[in-house]
Amino acid sequence: EQLQESGPGLVKPSETLSLTCSVSGASITDYYWSWVRQPPGGGLEWIGYVFHSGSTNYNPSLKSRVTMSISMSSNQFSLNLGSVIPGDTAVYYCARGGYGGAPLYTWGQGMLVTVSS
Amino acid sequence: EIVMTQSPATLSVFPGDRVTLSCRASQSVRSNLAWYQQKPGQAPRLLIYGASPRATGIPARFSGSGSGTEFTLTISSLQSEDFAVYYCQQYNDWPRTFGQGTKVEIK
Image (cartoon, rainbow over all chains, first blue to last red; front, side, top):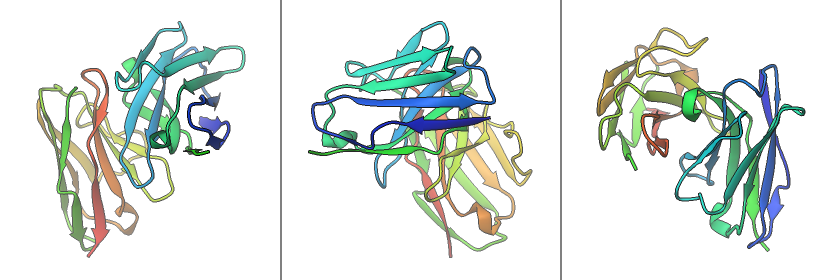
């Protein structure tokens, strides 16, 4: 089983950060699919999860700016974070989680996204 | 939001030492507690879930215990590959929250 994040590594302030996680070796119709981020030199922050039914649950600290979606045909899931600021600069990880998005059994390698003009 | 507090922030140890890391929750999370290991430049790796069962492929020298608000991760004999940062995470309530991490470094 492997997860791989993809998307732009540089996003301008006020724009939308968009990442996709491609899943191989597991079906996107099973499990809960989560996003976690880690600022440079910092700790881990759970962003939220998406389930194949379309149900989602987001961290309240980001809820107003986050949208997650899933594509069963592509075996992928996605993260959109709007109105980004430099403080959103982080390594973004996608992960396969248990019921309700945790624990996080398998992680992608992570992708650094820098917010800068 | 449940606040997870890990102690100590940094632990300096010798290879072969027995290591005990602590994680405290601001309110009960029952046994819905996971531990992760993260090495520099790598993604975290799940070690323990449900407070004590080891994840697939995790060596027996790693063990977890506790319930409610107090949890412990023990490494019975530290190997060179175990020097890393360790995080706890509760998944009993929303949002899922992590501790700030404990760095285990070579003394």
